[in-house]
Length: 390
Image (cartoon, rainbow, N blue to C red; front, side, top):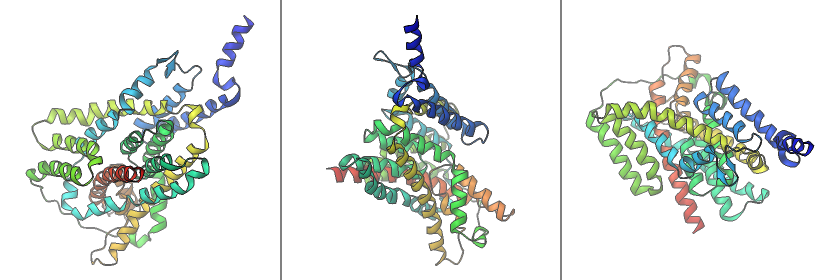
């Protein structure tokens, strides 16, 4: 009886020996994520499942992941949805069905902000390459990990997962995915200080004209088809994500698949987000999550996010040197992929400076451009790393 009690006692992770204390830290982290989801309402549909999954997978014996060489239900979800990139693809179909590209058609120059706001990806890629050898990661492993860490800056969880899975970074999928989705959820906290640091009050009050002009239906239908073809030619590695995003948008705009469009925007988006969140949380196993590399991933992911935001703002300020009609430089920060959260943050900041200033549509234009920009950047990074490796 005593021996049985000892075995049970030692089975509880937080009472065990050695590295088992790490599980207690994971309970705290999971609790913090749930708190942020419920109390602060920071992307609760993502943070709450991630936080609960982190607690679930670190419970004693953790049979939800694996038990006696048999996969638990969370491992089944991981193998079926993340390891084979299914969840990111389905998420992009849902996002495509949600996006209205009309604001971008009316402000086509905003596509450049979607490109400029990816600046942090490449800065972080090279900085991470320099630092990783200090923790024993070198060669092709460093190239692959640096690419995934850089993509975190785009605040695009599906693309980050896609890049990480492409390079089979299974050991680091937990911190990579958690960083990507957590920073995406924390856009309202991270972006405003960066924007205020780089802009003046006068710049934040700049007004921009917006004209409500109807966009011909034929353009809305041709756009997703042409974007897919062009991306397939220029950046072939981006096609799975671009293609799924544009397919979802084509369902929305064709006008004959309204029920499918509504299903993609609601049922599909909600279901996949729910499963994706708890599965990402399940990758946060204490034995793999708590180590120096995780700290670097979280740190440089934040570094990439800040530089992406700064890149968009600074690009707008640069353009203003040559334009008669000035651009509100805050618009540049919406060039990241966190749609539509970043655009809402920019509009909120504009109203705080001037309650009668509305820049939401311009922000949305930059935001949808950033959605495309992050996918193309992800494909470009994969191609670049493959070329360097070969």
